[in-house]
Amino acid sequence: MMTTKKLEHGKAQIDDSIITVMSGEKECNYRSYVGNVDDYDIQAAEQFKILTTLGLRDCHKLLDIGCGSLRSGRVMIPYLQAGNYYGIEPNKWLLEESMDRELGRDIIRIKRPTFSYSEDFNISEFNQKFDYMMAFSIISHTSQAQTRRCFSQAAAAMEEHSLFVFTFAEGPEIYTGDEWVYPGVSTYTFDFMSQMAAESGLKLERLDYCEPGFQTRVVAFKPSYEQALLDILNRSPIFKTKGDLQARFNTILEENKYLTEKNKELSAENVDLHAQLHEAKTNLAKFLSNPVIKGALTVRRGLKGKG
Ligand SMILES: C[S@@+](CC[C@H](N)C(=O)[O-])C[C@H]1O[C@@H](n2cnc3c(N)ncnc32)[C@H](O)[C@@H]1O
Image (cartoon, rainbow, N blue to C red; front, side, top):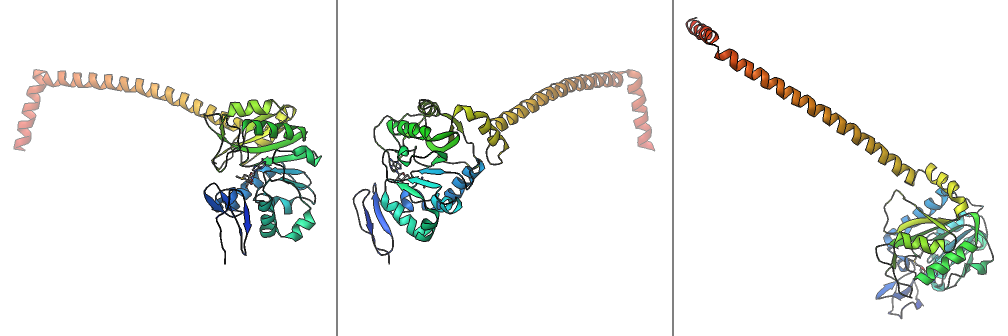
């Protein structure tokens, strides 16, 4: 049976069934520590879908920044070739618990993932370039200094073709605190986030993924790779690209123009028909008021009455 104990923030306790920790006021296990447990599986599927749509294949090297309870790792580690998955996660207990419960030690032995417990985004310690990097629900908690550090470390480990996919909490406020915010979020405007990325020579493109999400999804890349990335996005069935939106917008503009013209034509026809109707009514009234016609009609009505 599962037993739980009240623990200090971030401290873990192993019991006979599951590890529990205190995160803020809440008691968590390894799945709930990283977010809503009901979304745990579907978020993993979404992360995998986004990365593979952007071109991830099993021969690529992937770095999962803030890999937490291996939500994505439990899909990525078996998928990638041995030695190709790298993860950073300061909470060692999360990793240990997830390796035991989500993957099993045999897969860890066969696939040989590499982990770091770095708390300051020390990507350079891997001494490795990565084809893909991901940071889901990480930049949504970072201070400006942490975000800048993450971008500069990421950029240094990127090849020309490398892509860094991450999410952040987009909002009108720019977080100015010095602390990692958890379980709440630090918000930034898209422009400010782009500015921080640009300081490390990276450009950002929104990933307008078909499923609406709480956080903004973005891909960071080196400017020289922009056209290749846009080609990937344009071909992709799951992203609404700027091109798609522009095309849809143009179609709506054209439709709107056509409907406005049609409306004008119909209004003019309408005015014309009104005028004709008015003229016809006036003529009829004139015709009926003619004494000869009036008399003839009276005689006709009288005959009808007799008939
Ligand atoms: C909301 S969870 C997201 C985990 C994972 N990316 C996912 O999508 O399931 C945030 C994670 O960031 C980790 N974290 C905290 N400080 C960090 C840091 N300085 N660098 C990297 N990860 C950190 C937390 O331990 C936690 O696992």
